[in-house]
Image (cartoon, helix red, strand yellow):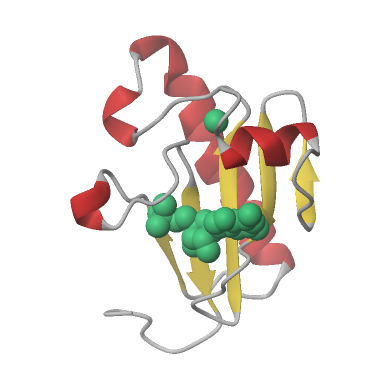
Length: 112
Ligand code: 5GP
Ligand code: ZN
């Protein structure tokens, strides 16, 4: 997707503070953090929204959660973090490339 900012972050065309990368997943710090620890975990495959996940992507999308949890532990928030997927503009989805928010580092981070 040439006009997708997260695809451009994957290629390096748009710079980001990367935390973790492998063949199919990338994690990086959110540019506008809503909590002391706020990062995003995305598949390298361009999937627009959670509702666009198909059966062949079940393993890939499950991996987002595993990697996100590992990074949360590495950043000392394993005892309290939120996992957020926004689906659609009405829910506040701004970037239409599937992404998992991990937010931690403050007590009871709900509501935002
Ligand atoms: P959404 O509202 O779509 O669920 O979340 C998109 C997230 O991407 C927001 O938290 C926003 O701050 C983050 N974001 C948008 N553009 C960039 C960018 O260029 N770099 C980084 N690191 N984060 C971005
Ligand atoms: Zn994309």
